[in-house]
Image (cartoon, rainbow, N blue to C red):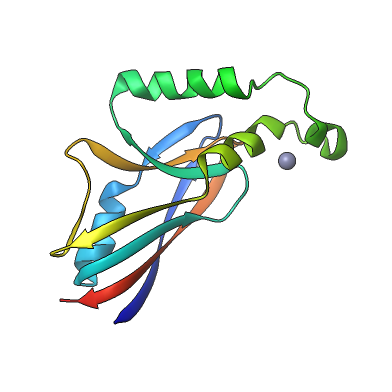
Length: 141
Ligand code: ZN
């Protein structure tokens, strides 16, 4: 069994920017000839999240609208009273969705649905440089 670690770097615009990182993750699996195991996709930062979605225009609008209902941007949050950075909503959204996604790898391929894509969502109220850590545990091919 091996452990193989890599990263995906990207810049984001913030404000619910949804970035499809599936191709980068797939490239990491193929480049390192990883055959069977589990891949952790993790974002370090408390105003972003990793999840999956059917990456199509309707859902790319629906998801931010859902987030706006759950944790509206213009609501007053205790976090903002303390830190005055105006991104209390982003921290809450990040906590709800979570910082990581685990995907099985089988026969050198990600086990994903046909339309299921791995996404980084940046909720922050400014543009950011983001580094996503990839960590595979399993067998090489
Ligand atoms: Zn903050």
